[in-house]
Length: 360
Image 1 (tube, rainbow, N blue to C red):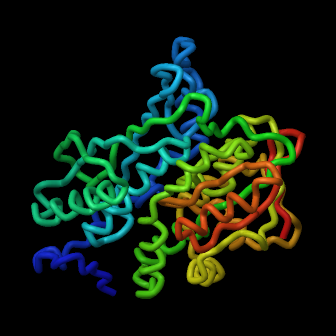
Image 2 (tube, helix red, strand yellow):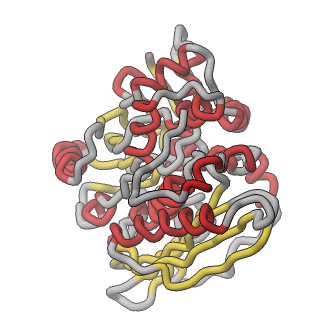
């Protein structure tokens, strides 16, 4: 299937470009597995303690946060990956949306971005590369920020992403390690992006499925800005390459709590479920499960396809919010007001060891 985006007229020469054939993985599915990453960082020293470094590496949070003064803290993050789709403009949009998500997850308002560009110049036409950049520029324009510069290299696989910088009040930063026992868990976007990307690479994704994939991967996680103003919201993260289970476990470890979710409450992309039931799965999903299976208790009778959706890598996935019970309706209303169609209350955090319990 062609799946071209009609954004003002793609060059005819670009129609034959299939970006995914240049990459061994795609989107957040090409992340280093959490187990390998943990080993790589195990002996790396933590940053020198600083009263102004509010968030560093200590809790696997979404971005670094540095206090500038009593009213302002800078949020800094970077994210880039190999193509998850074939269309250059769509790839640029998805990568930029995903990169800015970490800024929103900390409760910050984006300020500006820097582009990270690596392209096989001997294989991709310049017109295709220009459309990748245009896709990223369009997303940043929608976020109200400029791309102020960046860096580019000639390399074997195409990669694109952003450095994202944002601003937040130091007292309103939403860490992933500040959840509290009794907090409710709300997920802002449905799961299944990895399944759709795997189906796309196999040539079995429908046009409707591709449209659904673009719908979610290019929707900016703007509710994060307003979530920073809600005292009843204690922790926020975005669900990306490690899957819902992996990123929820980061909240559990950082906060010293156990999570309990109900699979039947999870928002799921319908076509992704169909592909999952037929055995479609990404390699990253299996790597994710191998990395943290010992920390997850699955209800008996939960099928493999259901487990695979829990570990499915989400490119530009939804915000996962931990809030007190009194704030649940306000949080859900915020997502709906910002045109998120599928926010859902999916579970709760409780006192106990850092584990994830999933009932069917």
